[in-house]
Length: 138
Image (cartoon, rainbow, N blue to C red; front, side, top):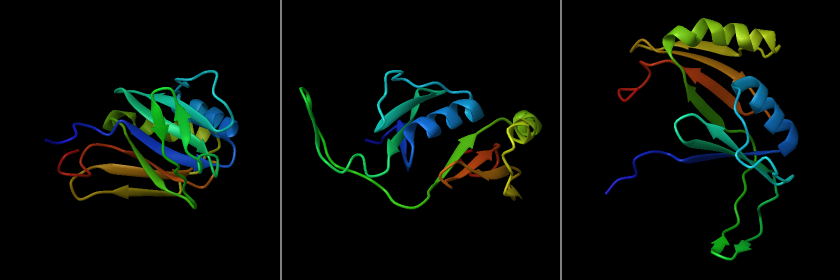
């Protein structure tokens, strides 16, 4: 018995609205909950995946709903997220980031043939765009 994919990935930010707008502009993704509040916004990623954007410190209490409870959680500092892209999309992504004045912090060419572009979001989280050839599974 094994999980078959990662459904949700969460980051914690200072401003949910600012992060929502930034991720929508950079990745061209939309909120799943357009009526989100200042504590949480769920962003729709291709492949039935969800990026959860939480207000830092906003989920440190248990949330009770008619169907059950969500335990408290939070994180401090910065984290790392990698987004898979096609090799043919590498140049368009470079141009897109440049058009948004987002600096590429680093570029890595991996032994297996993949390429990674690294840059930061508004809260300093390290984001990676990665082409096939990085891992034996990708």
